[in-house]
Image 1 (cartoon, protein in one colour):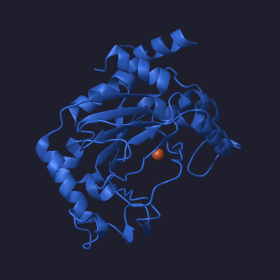
Image 2 (cartoon, helix red, strand yellow):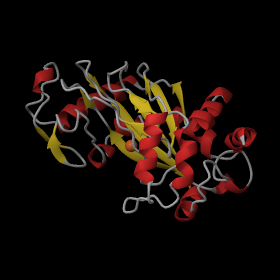
Image 3 (cartoon, protein in one colour):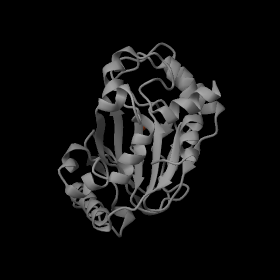
Length: 268
Ligand SMILES: [Fe+2]
């Protein structure tokens, strides 16, 4: 269960931060698996070896161009450790349910639907970004989660958010999809990016960030010399899934939990 403060933060800022206990063996194994997926030339203790063209689950691209960010998705889902750190993690799932599952009523029978994303390491790079750029995801979900597998400091690959941006973006994202961007959507995101100060979310191993699907965000950049390891998983419920093609543009609607809705209505 999320605390009242967490729910308030999620409604107001579009995200909340909590800490959970992670199974140590799973964390260790997940980190080791990353090195099985990277090129043989990558040596864990030698950051100067983390260079060149790399293929991940999305694209073949140079480490410099991609700012050290890799995504290992489907190929990692079969590992028990990866599942234990995402959709099989009880504490994580119960926290998300505080946001998108009802205590009673119509949603009771609706499915809780985790969508596994994978492990997203960020390898430290020498080049520094002049400005962190935010984006809004195009696929449909309600709550995204980022689980840190190591301690994450400022400029160490901290997930970065623009607090409150979900309130501005959601009404304009009703038809947003992989193949369609509403007119003026990029310009809107750019205005939001410039008008709100981004926050790098730091935290110890076991830090969990839960964020609203319309929140402007960025993976963050890592210049501290190590690797930032994080698991990503998205969540939605069956009712939201059915409605996804006909979104009202509301930041929160009846597909969210009564606690979230009560807090949201207080703010209207
Ligand atoms: Fe994203």
